[in-house]
Image (tube, rainbow, N blue to C red):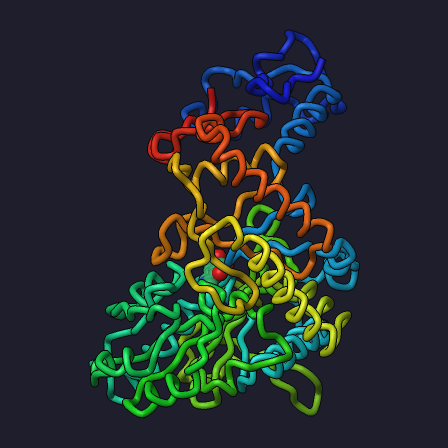
Length: 487
Ligand SMILES: *Cc1c(COP(=O)(O)O)cnc(C)c1O
C-alpha cells in the first residue's frame, strides 16, 4: 500500500519504519571505529543515537514520488498566475548547462580556460542590450527584485557622484509590484506613491505635482500590472529627466512587448529582466531565477564588477572599475540560467521573440473578451499580456474572488493571482502566456463560466471549495502565522 493516500495526510517515514529494515548496505568501513571517535572530543559527539526511520529503498522512493505527485506546476496544468508569467519551459533547454564543457567548469579557473563561458556571458549581455535598447548589462542579479535593488544602488552611487545625494525620493505608481517600493527602500530611498487614473495608467498631469527637486527617479512597469500599456510613456520619461531624475523600467514581464517596443527608446535609464519569466527558465523551487540589469551609458561605470571585456588575446574579467558599486552576487550570477535563456533566444530568433509577445497578448485579449461577459472588467480596454477582473458580475450571494480561486483547484487549474494589484477590488489577475493552446483557453473559459453559474445556483457549495485536493480550504492567516511544518 502506498504511504501516501491522495485524501489523507502522508505517513511520515518514521511512522512506517520497521526495526531492522534496510535499503542499502554500504561495505563495512576499514577504518577502526575507535579512530574516528578518538579524533572528536566527546563533548562534540552525539550522546544519544539518531532516531532514523528504517525502510527499504523502494518504500522511500515511493514515498517521495507520491509526495511529488501532490505538487502542481506548469508541467501539470494551466497556471494563469498574473504577473508571474508561468509559461512552459522547454525541456531541451535543461540539457544545455549539463553539457560537460559547461557543467565541469569552475568559476575560479584561469580566464584562458574559460573563453567559451565568457563568450556566452558577453553574447547574452549584448543580446539583452539589443532587446531592451540599453547600452550595457550585468548578469549578476539573482532575481527580479535583486535586479531592482542593484539598479537602485547604482542610482544612489550616481547621485552621490553628482553631488545630488539629497535626492532621496523614488516615485512609484500605486499599481506597482510590491518589490519596487521594497527595493527602493532597501537602497535607502523614500517612496512616494503615484495614483493611477481611472483609465488605469499614469497621466503626465497627475505626475507633475510630484516632480520636486527631491526626486531621484521614477520606477515604472510598462505594461503596468493591470496589463495596460502606459501610452504617455515618452512624455513621462521626459518630464522626469527635465527635473534631473532617472527612470527605472521593471521588465519582469517583457514578453508583452519583446521585439515590438524597447524600454531604451521609451526613455528609460535602467531596466531589469526576469529570465525566469520572460525567457523560459523555471521559477521558484525549479529555479534559481536570474534578473539581469541593463543601463544607459551614463550609468554603465557603476555596474557590478567584474565586467567581461575583449582584448587582443580574447575575453577577460575586468575588475578595474573605480566607480562600480562592487559585487552583488558570488562569481558570475546564475550562469546555468543564463545559458538556458540565451539558447531560448537564439532558438527563436528575432521574429520568434516577436511572435512570443504577439501570442501572449492575443491569448490574454481572447480570455478578457470572453470572460468579461460574466466577470467585472474595471479597465475595459485592449490589454497586453495580462488583464485584471474584479469579481463576479451577477453575484447576489456575495461569492468572493477567494472562493473562485479555491474552486478552480477542483478543476486542476492553478488560480490566477488574486487581490493584486491592490487598486482593484476582488482582483483576479489573469496571464495565460503564449505557451497555451486554443483548446486550453477555451476549456478555461468554460470552467470560469461554470463557476459563474454555480455562484448563483449553489453559492454555499462554492464557499466550501476545494473538495478534491489533499487538504481542504485552509485558514490562511493561521497557516501563515502558525505553520505546522512537521508532525
Ligand atoms: C515577478 C515580478 C517582480 C519580482 O521578481 P522576482 O524574481 O520574484 O524577484 C518584479 N516586478 C514584477 C512586475 C514582477 O512580475
